[in-house]
Structures are given as C-alpha cells and as structure tokens.
Amino acid sequence: MLACANLSSINIPINIPGQSTATVTSVIDVTNGGTISDLNVPRLKGTYNLVKDIRVTLISPEGTSVLLFSGVCPGSNTQTFNLSLDDQAPTDIDCPPLGGPFQVEDLDGLSEFIGEEAAGIWTLEIKVLTFDGQGGSLDEWELEICSNASPSPPVIVNNNTLGVPPGMENWILAEELLCEDSNNLPEDLDFTIVTPPLNGDLYYNNAPMLQGGIFRQSTINAGNLSYVHNGGAETTDSFVFTVSDGEGGWIPMTTFDIEIDENATVNTSEIGIDNELLVYPNPATNFIMLKNSTGVQEVRIFNLIGRQVTNFTDISQGQSYPVADLPNGMYLVQLIDANNDIMSTHRMNKR
Image (cartoon, rainbow, N blue to C red; front, side):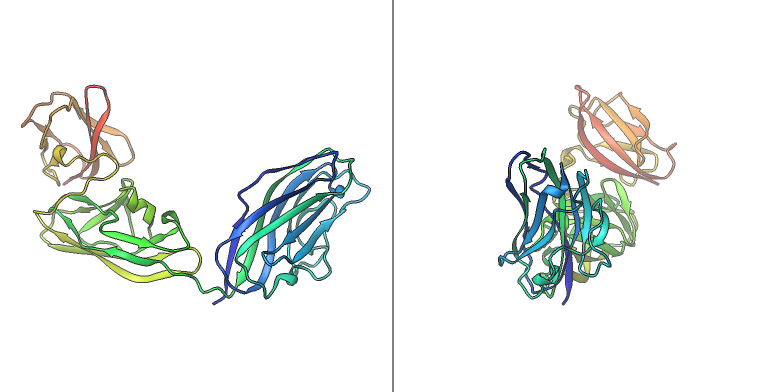
C-alpha cells in the first residue's frame, strides 16, 4: 500500500552563526518504515545574510546526500529563503528563493532517495561558506515521504457496554472504550460517528455530537465524552463509529452498546462530577433537587452556549428548585461552594 506522510522538524528554529564557516544541522525522526517511492521538501524556510553564502544538503538515514542549493542569488543581497522542492517542478530555484516548487541543485535530484528505507533520522545540513556573513536562522523544514509502508492499524482494546440510569447521563471512559496504536498517541486516533444514538445523545465537552462528528481517544481519556438518555422506555441504545490514525490505518464500522439500567453506576469524569452530589430528577419538568446539598451555597443553571439562565441561593437538604419556566432542552447545573468555587457540574435535560 502506498502511503504518503508530511513530517516536520521539531528542533527549530536553529541559529546559523555569522563570521564563521560553521555547519548546523536539524533532524526529522521518521518512525514509519517502508521503501521510498517519492520524496519532496514542501517547506524550507529561514534567513541568512547573505543566502549566497550557505550550502543546504539533505542526508538520508542511509547516508545518501542530496544538495538542495548552494550559492544561490550570487551578486544579490537576498537574505530570505522560503521555498518548496520537487523533482517534478518545471524550473530551477529562482532569485529570490521564494515559492516554488523548484528543482534541487543536485543533478540526480531527490530521486536519489528512491528505493531507500524511509525510517530513521533525516538530517538537514547547512554549511556557511564564507566568514563574511552576518548570521541567520533555520525556521522551518518539512519532508513529504511516499513509501509502500503497510500502516500499523489501531486496535480496539476495550469495547464494553455502558450502563446508564434512565433519563440520566454517564461518561464513556477508557474502561468502556479504548483504542490503541503502536505508532500514534491518543490524540492522533480519530473516532468518527457513523450512526448516532437513537434514544439519547452523545456529548463532547457539553456540545452534542451528530453524524460525522469526531472525538479522539484523548477525549475519552480526559472524561469529556458522555451519553445522556432521553428518558424514554427503551432499555438499550448504541452508536456506530470508525477509527482512523491519520496514516492510513483504520478500524471499520464498530458498534458501541449502551444499556439503560436503573442500577447502573455513574462514572466520575474529570470535570468534577461527584456521585454524591447528583441533580435529580433528570429529565426534569417542574423542579430539580440535590441528592446531597452539603457544602452547596448556590445552584447556577446555564444553557449550552454558556449564558446563565437562573440561580438559587436558598439551599437546604430536601429543597426543590423550580425549572418549569425554562424552555425544553439541555442545561448545565453548577453547584457552588462558600468560596465561590465550582464543586461539580451536571447536565440537566428539561422536558
């Protein structure tokens, strides 16, 4: 399978000293292997006073060197380079060396790398040619490598049924849904909703998720993905998703099951949900109450765009708080302590 990837150096910017014949290097560590079929330099950006006084070379993990440019713009005062390089470009490097794509100066071109192994340390080397320069910097550089690498697909480690009390919310944590990939971090694994739940809604950071919505494994790990049951009579629900890692690896359509169970344990998420401070009933029609009001000094209710719609300061155990006048929809209920700090945040479905 042919796969192409763009990779950027992270050890930049790098100072290029003046009044010396120094050599500076910057690297890109390519972790995915495969035989190279095409290689381009989509970004090479920096400054030197003057550009004609430097030589820039790309060196592969196998030690092959390709001269990108040297002594460009002779006789000019050009101090900036910001260009892309590609063997299929129609022209050599212009003066000033801006834009592109251009062909590299090496007669054999970037095709010298074709057939080599992609994985390893790629080095960009900048050599100062004279003592006359005033210095500059390498600011950015990128590689585009196409190879026949077989992507390492993500794998599902956990896909366990989530229990949710009727009409309430529960958080989908890694114990319920966990995907891993040997080449990628949790923030690189994209879950795409193919079919959303029918009897409730998924929420990502308090925003509802629809068909085509994307969350990541890092979203789950942080406790920012939840399901809210709509309070209907159905006892099951589910959603269908795919997973991709951005490198061609993916998991086809997979179902995540949800069971509506009055005895289900509600997970505690990272946003401060405390099971001892539950707001009920949920969905609510005329009023809400607190399971435990200890330490609560104020109840604030916000709509999903963040505007406070009402609040209550007369707090006591067994007290009810009227919500009948609120329009139907989802709300956030914050419980505030004596220091004006948020004790916990809960979603409320007003029906």
